[in-house]
Length: 317
Ligand SMILES: NC(=O)C1=CN([C@@H]2O[C@H](COP(=O)(O)OP(=O)(O)OC[C@H]3O[C@@H](n4cnc5c(N)ncnc54)[C@H](O)[C@@H]3O)[C@@H](O)[C@H]2O)C=CC1
Ligand SMILES: Nc1nc(=O)c2c([nH]1)NC[C@@H]1CN(c3ccc(C(=O)N[C@@H](CCC(=O)O)C(=O)O)cc3)CN21
Image (cartoon, rainbow, N blue to C red; front, side):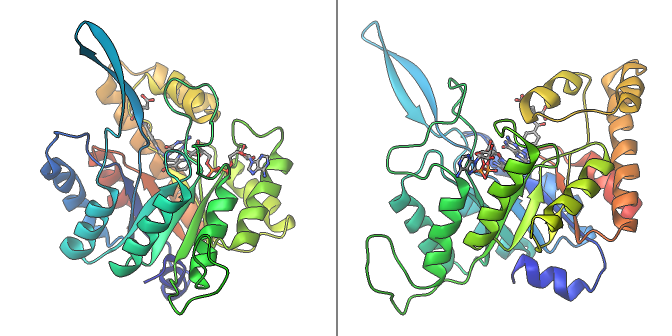
C-alpha cells in the first residue's frame, strides 16, 4: 500500500516509521533484523531502506595501486523484499541519482514493480566521499526532480528513449527530501522551496524532512511550504542524538543547527551512556509536541542500533 494511503487510512492518527541502512558487505544481516524486531510492536506501516552510493577503494597490484569502484552497502532491493515478506510492512527503497545511470534506474524501478513495491523515495544523493560537491554520474540525473519525472513517466507507461506510451504502467507513490533548515548547497530557503515545489510538480506525493532538533524549524517550514503551493504531507524526520561527537558531526554533515539547551545538556554528561539518554529524552519531547500538532508520521533515522528509537516509541505509541 502507498505511504499516502497509510496516512489517509490513519485518519489523523500519527504513524510510526523508521529508516534502516543496508549492512556493510561481509556483515551479518541478522544484526539488522535483531534491531528491527523490537520496533515492530509499534506497527510501522512502512520502513525506508537507504541506498548507499559507490566509493573508490585502492587495491595493491604488482606494487601499484589500482583504483576500484565499489558499493560497500549493496542489498537495498533484496532487503526491501525481505522486509515485506518477513514483517508484512511496506518497504520504501531509496533511489538515487548519484551512482546510477538512467537506464539502471529504470531496471531497478521495473524490478520494484514486479516485486510489488508500491513506494520509493527519490533522492539526488550525496557527493562521493572524495568530492566536495555532488557531481552527476555520466548518464545519470543531476537533480532529484529529474528522477521524480522519470518515475512519473514510468507511472504513465513511458520508458526511456521511447516515443510511445506502453500498456506497462507502474503506480509508485513517490517520496522526496525537504530541508527545514535549507539544503547545504541551496543559496536560500526560498530557493530551496522552489526546488521542492519542482519535485512536487514532477509528481512527488509526500516529503520527508531532514533531521531537525528544534520543532519550530519544522512548523515554520510547513507554513512556508504551504505558502509556496506545496500541499502534500510533510513527514518530520527525527534523529536521536547518541554520542558527544554528534555535537560537531551533525551540524557539519547535515548542515543543521542544534539548540543551545540540547548542547548544554550533552556537555553536562559524564559519558556517552548519559548522552544517549539525553538524546532519547530530547527526541521524546520533540516527538510529543509534533504528535500533538497532528503530524502524519514520525519517521526515525535509526541507522543501526535501535534501542534508542525503541525507548522513544515506547513513550509515544
Ligand atoms: N540517502 C538518504 O536516505 C537521504 C539522503 N539525503 C541527501 O540529501 C541531499 C540532496 O538530495 P535531494 O534533496 O534529493 O536533492 P535535490 O536535487 O532536490 O536538491 C539538491 C540541491 O540542488 C538544488 N537544486 C535542485 N534543483 C535544482 C535546479 N534545477 N537548479 C539548481 N539547483 C537545484 C537544491 O536546492 C539543493 O541544494 C543529498 O545530499 C542526499 O544524499 C536526504 C535524505 C535522505
Ligand atoms: N545529506 C544527507 N544524506 C543522507 O544520507 C541522509 C540525510 N542527509 N538525511 C536523512 C537521512 C538520515 N541519514 C543518516 C545517516 C547517518 C546518520 C548518522 O548519524 N551517522 C553516523 C555519523 C555519520 C558520519 O560519520 O559521517 C552516526 O554517528 O550515527 C544519521 C542519519 C541518511 N539520510
